[in-house]
Image (tube, rainbow, N blue to C red; front, side):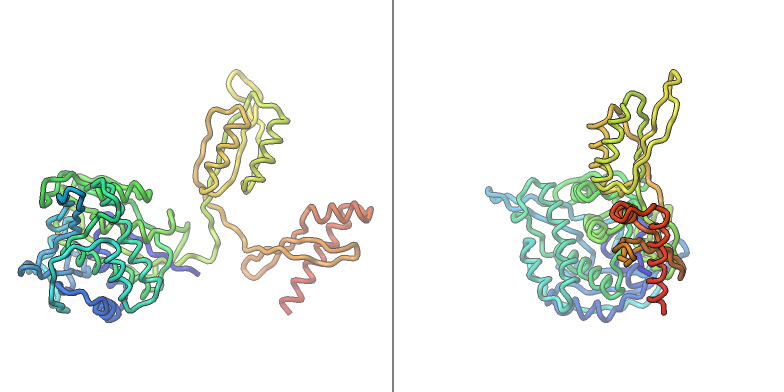
Amino acid sequence: MGKILYLECNSGISGDMMVGALLDLGADRQVLEQGLKSLGVGGYHLHFGRKTVCGLDAFDFDVHLEEDGDTNRENERVQGCGKSGEHAYAHSHEGGGGHEHLHSHEHSGEHEHTHSHGHAHAHRNLYAIYHIIDRLDSNERVKELARRMFRIVAEAEAKAHGLPLEQVHFHEVGAVDSIVDMISVALCMDNLGIEDVVVSALAEGHGFVHCQHGILPVPVPATVNIVSAYGLELRFTDNEGEMVTPTGAAIAAALGTKRQLPASCRLVKVGMGAGNKVFRQANVLRAMILEESGEDREAICVLESNLDDCSGESLGFVMELLLEAGAADVWYTPIFMKKNRPAYMMSVICREGERERLEEIILVHTTTIGIRHYPVDRTVLERENKTVCTSWGNAQVKVCLYKGRSFCYPEYESVRALCRSNHVDFQTVYHEVRRAGNEAQMAIKQ
């Protein structure tokens, strides 16, 4: 049964909170430190500790930067160099995501640091950062995830500043900070062996944040661009300040593989990554490893439309088009509409990714001017198609499995073809095909 990571972002999301949550789930710290060491990047040291947030014990992870003796974090500072030589700086949030990142007296555990010195004053573009990621001593899956996260941030910054992607340069300090966060997330995800991730709505604050060359609204432009481009959900709160950093939004966008949690699952483990700013609620990112139950529940979509002025021939034609286009099922229900008009309600079952295409068929080929749609869950049996041999020839059957039991159902078109070619009645052929299918299944079990 597959495992799913669920990120509950009720206090937003940032890089350090995400790494802390993954380490709290059991990601190997030694693997993380060895991977970061292989990059050959200096100018920072790591803090690993525990912290109490609103009475909750959470993992406290921080990247402390060492430029000019300042150990405070400077998150995601980016500059774009235009043809005029002017520098357009993006945000350099003080305590990005509301996390003050200080060697404070708030840490409840010992301060354990991994030191790495030799900070250089430089600016790196996206491809220079790719070159650093290439030095990582890990597998290609980890590297590709790190590249994807950084590219998401770079594209968002490019759009925010109206620059081509190749002209977006990350300031050394912000680059080191983001490199450590994103590569740490990629290493920890690989170490935990989790591939599917569901991300909740991202809680965000309001107001403004101070950056090096001005004051920006919350959410900041890069975060807005990421949320918009990747279909993330925002939930605004009355908290003052930033709760979702561009790095946090990029992590959510890169990791999310599913929109919804399964209908039923087992909670395996919970991890919490701590932030430092004080909100009314606990400022933690809660990550949960869930295990799907044995039943195969599939999220699908139902489309409905009421039709009182469409001919029977037209409805039959539309049904054929919808089934050919991938609808799982189509049916009509007799109804009475306004002024007691006899009509039909069209119902269509489809996957969410097929909804737009099927709606276009309905709107073009019927007289409806509106379609209702809503998500539903369905439980689906494991199934496979097989060919069985009968005295009249081969036939197709569908074998469905449920809790160790198997059910064999002859395919209509196969039974129909044997009836016509052998001049035998339908019931006789149907039962013979089903018997052959059941015997084949018994032989496999033996």
